[in-house]
Image (cartoon, rainbow, N blue to C red):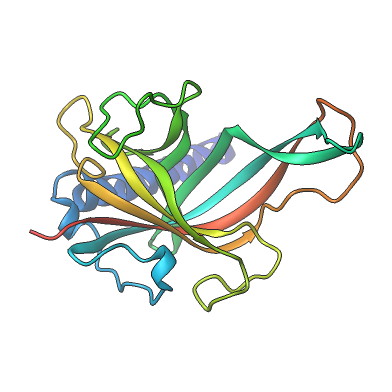
Length: 223
């Protein structure tokens, strides 16, 4: 009986810890303007992946994800691994009391609220999406710049997937008016590690997921 009581007490303590962390994050991210969400220091990046003047960084998420590849035939009669644009996937975290806490998910979805930067027509397979795990606000993006991994201190790991600058092509508030990502203008993907195409032989139609990590930096327009 005492053993079971101890287990229940420990479980309750863990639940309380998780609840308190969630409460802190909700207060930090869900009930304030994006400008106050985090105190961040803007990374020094090359012009090709730097947002234009008039945009300030307000949030950073440390991502753990996978890059999808599919094996396709080549014009020379062989096969090659190609990036599967239909399958970006990552979870973004921030640090709370020394523990990672999920703040954003990254995936592909239809742009439900395109802006003036959105392509016309929109990609039929959807656009890259970041959704707040706290208030369900979203931003959709498209790539406007890139650099090779290993070519700059902001992207130091040779052989990894490229570092990117993406521009918002749509934003959406959460169902209860959440605005964490609703005013995002640009996203940087920096400090990539892993995620590159496999080097093994493949059979047409074969797919493979390659793990990667990266830091995603979110910007909004200066007020």
